Structure formats: structure tokens, C-alpha cells
Length: 212
Image (cartoon, rainbow, N blue to C red; front, side, top):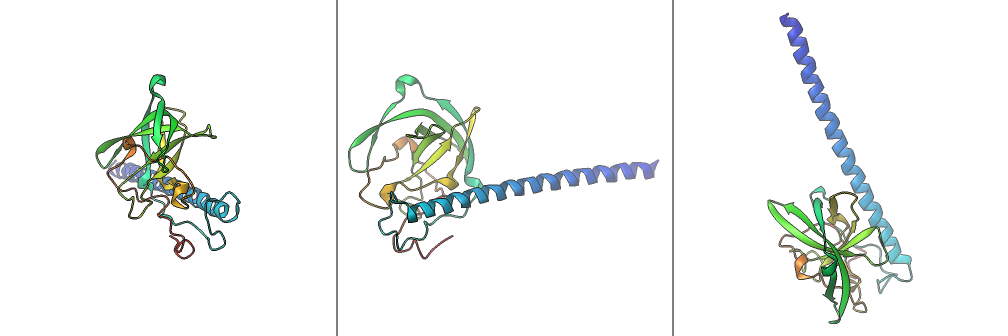
């Protein structure tokens, strides 16, 4: 009887270890898929900035790539969202040329980071019905990233949660050329921690020499 119990115990432990290994491999595969998706996005953007006529890069001949942080899962954040009341949707945003433009706010995204809760304001994305627009600032601005803040396109949710994947954070065109006028991230979207993910500060003389 004791030998039988030992066998049952052994197989029970084996099943638990197998399940742990399977989940670990699944998480690893998800992370690998995420990294591949991010790297593909970056390659395609670099090619567009290099070869397209509407590229914001002033010296395309010397340009090879933008500079990025390595992909990090900690900056892929799940958030719950709450819709904005229609009567409060109209939002006046300041532009970098000191003019003002109107954006349509659609939702607040609530998330927790390192034990603290944050709220960000999301807007309609002009010309793309599948995504919302998130202009934001964080503690890395003026250091590792563009001092004017960055943008993030957020896929419209199908349920009550959405994903803020800051690995896809990108610079406004104003970061590449003074010829553009861009929305300045509103005070509601200023974060007090550094988001060391996504696109780094652009430097025309270093874009072809430094790559993560």
C-alpha cells in the first residue's frame, strides 16, 4: 500500500512539474512573438522613413534607422477603460506652433504601475478607426526620449480592458523637423515615472551609428 501511495505521489509531482514547464514555455513563446512583432514594426517604419517621399527625415540619404529601447514586457500594461461622456468629448489641445486644435476624447484608461494607480486620456485617431490616440509625457523626456513627449496608438478594445504597449511608443514628427506642428500631450497624460520603452530621442547625426 505504501509503495502504491509513493507512486501516486511521484506521478502527482511529475504532473505539477510538467504543467509548470508547459506554462513557462507558453510564456516564453508569447514573449518571443511579442518581440518579433515589435522588431517587424520597427523595421517597416525605418524603411518608410528612409524611402518614402512623405518621410519627416530631412536627410534621408544619411538615415539608416531610428533608435529604440530593447523590448520589455513590463511596459506592456493591461488597463481598464471608461468611456467619456459625449457632452465632455470635445477637447482643446495646444500645438507645438502655439496654435490650438480640437481633438475628440473617447475614454480614460486606468492602470496600476509599481503600486500606484494612473489615469490617461485617450482620443480618436484621425484616419484610423481601429486605434485610439494617446499623447503622453513621462520622466524620461529630455533625457533618453524626446523632450516634447511621445505618442502611442492603442488598439480599440473588444471588452472592458485594453493594452497599453509602450514598446510601440513613437516620436511626433516635430522631433525630426521644425516644419511640423504637433499636439502637445495634455497635463492629464503626464506620468511621474520613466517609460524606458519604445522610440528614443532622435539625433540626425547618430541615427545611422547607434542601434539597440
